[in-house]
Image (cartoon, rainbow, N blue to C red):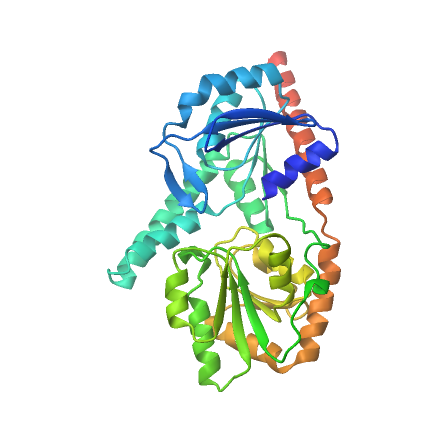
Length: 378
């Protein structure tokens, strides 16, 4: 989503931009100042997530990519993670002596650890947790090593900015996320009843910690709470388990456009228990929709929510339940938090975010020229 918005920003401003990405077929096209080269993945590609895959033989396209880069003559190559396409970009940046900027989008190490632990549920928890933690550290260290190749790195929260800056010894800057405050708005609400809707939007996968929603519902029912329902938007391999275990929940599947806007606005409290998100833009979209959020104190979403003002940051599973009850019982507090969240979120425009990305490009060029001058002098 962020990459698509970045290329839209370049097109609207007439900035020359070449996008090289993978897809279901190989083709090229141009849209204003933006040129696209889509390259087909091989049949041996394996799935990483919904519509995301990795092709171990993607390097077969290297000549085509190189020719396209030579024709385009880029000042900078922007890589977006440890993936098959960006690995080619990193290699060709080195080969053609084109400066690299790298942006961190996904906490791959935490995703991998969560899935690995989920796959080892049949083993004692202490043993599987140890293996998962070991794998998480190794993958994180490998990812940080990969980001030593760019001259400038961008990350979606301050915690990651500090991790990458310290680990890579490169210039590291914040690249947050914007929100479309017209698309996500309280004005999109279509329900008017006495049901309190606790919402979730995202992939229904183990790394999103979605099974905690089951425990939250159990505790609410145990404490005698009624008149509530969970509104769960998204798809993933945990959906069947959630549907089986939750008694008061509506599952919409994947939504987009106006249907997604309405779903957010129809929520009264947004609960996002993920501990692995680098940013958590869904919490920001909920705020734009006038909905207070309860998020984890681990990962990026805690930087979006002002604790006690636009929502709550939960440190324990009990916190989720207690904060949910507090908001369920106090309509005025819910509405006031929603208003404050909306006010703060409206100021976070995508254009401001991408202007910062172009500042990062300028810094990349400055560093590259400075190092070249030192090299020439030597």
